[in-house]
Image (cartoon, rainbow, N blue to C red; front, top):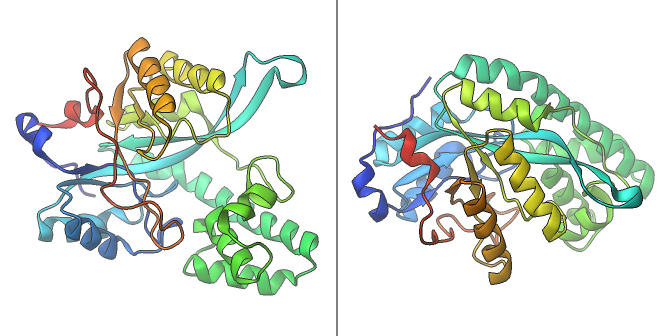
Length: 305
């Protein structure tokens, strides 16, 4: 399996970098080859394919990246479970599925063996969500499930909520993908089904044991209050996490400053990524990543030789 490339630290400031993207191996709309071609067209120099809970697309992406002169960082986005505490009354504890990016790992065997169980869980979860949707909307399950499978290229283990949301839009059940999440698919909504996962602490340990860096993905996109976002970042650091992904450039400046303060307070490094999915989320564009604030360091610097 491919190793992460060698890059000069001194030249990093002049590189165009995107460390978060998805292909058809999870819930993106472009194959790994197509995705790397798009990255090349966007003048990206250093890139990470971070499909959900799978390494399947990396060899194909690596082959294309080598042919186009793009430096590919080994990546994955792992779904994990974490209980946030510190609220009040019935909200004192809050269970959330948190996403952690693993960047630059070299032990593919251990990573893949661990993720295989999560992949099977994703397939089972996707089917259970569609069963709920069929019951809620009066649609035939088989018809809806086959439509969802088509979006995932027939791979049940790759089914994600974005695939299901796309089908809900096409069947006029909801007007937009965002509405699909708001009404049915987001955490604790009518069709939500939790995924079987590792704990956040075990996920961090797995990534580091495999030679990579553990990065808290999109900390402001878990429907948490600002207080709990700060607590999430603090606990990620306490568990030994390496870095935190910066909020996208379209989020409020106040949000970015809050995350920057938390990153600095806990001594974390940072990652920048577009979270590109292709046509299913066209508002996210390859290479459209936030700039680093003064004093911040990219987590991949420690991976460069």
